Amino acid sequence: MFEPPVSEVLRCERIGTHVLLVTMNRPEVLNAMDWDMGEANNELMRRLTYDPDWVRCVVVTGAGRAFSAGGDLKVRNTQSIRDWTIQHEVAERTAEMRMTSPVPWIAAVNGICYAGGLELALTCDFIYADRAAKFAQTECRIGIMPGMLGTQNLPRAVGERRAKELILSAQPFTAEEAHAWGMVNRVCEPGTVVAEALATAERIAACAPLSVRQAKKAMHFGLQTDLRTGYRLELEAYYRLLDTEDRREGIAAFNEKRKPDFKGR
Image 1 (cartoon, helix red, strand yellow):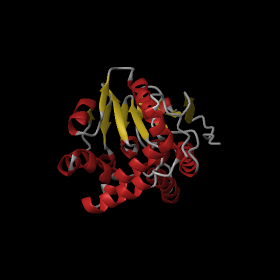
Image 2: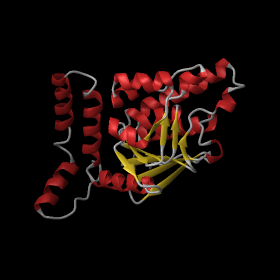
Image 3: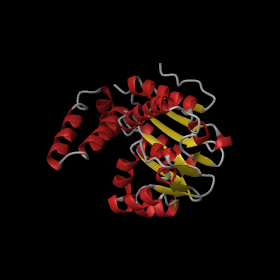
Image 4: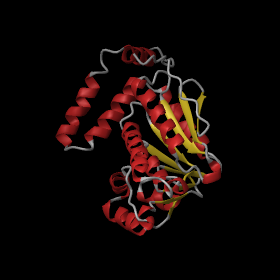
């Protein structure tokens, strides 16, 4: 049975029956990501990838007034190139696993969301943001550049020309702007973003988990190719659902006018 890793810097809490709430917990440094948080994130992703079990949707947020300010620059200031590289490679694997995870991820951005924090949010399936949240891809201002899919995911979210402006100038932007550009799905009133994300997570969790996973996979990989190939991927995912207990249960529940009891089989 899936059990999330125990970590002081990455709190994992079961919400209801099928939702996992993940909270980055270094509020004293705006949830900047150090080695411990990187390792905890990686271990969580490995467990969810190999055996999600009861988890049907994940909401990730930050403790305090920030989602995440990105990498911990105080640690980076004294890090060797070797240690920096090793830490970054762990983050790379984690980001790739999150994007292809069978479980949907919702980022509940509650405040500052800069650099690697924004990249983390962009690897989630979609983003809800507090009205006061601030975003920025700040790496070019300190002599590096986005390295956790930022140059790939931000252009796909807001368009190439706008992403170039934001990344090359390191210009902060608001939740309202992010929503208008299509990066953020919903702007929430102050203090409600986690609750709204959890409500959506519960709706996702109430759907047939195999259907959710197959639909997510078809969209993620299909959008990386042409329409005809994407449609073939969709059909392959579709036909895998026909001979499942959940498909039979869903159709039976509809005809019997009752709530379905999906098992993920």
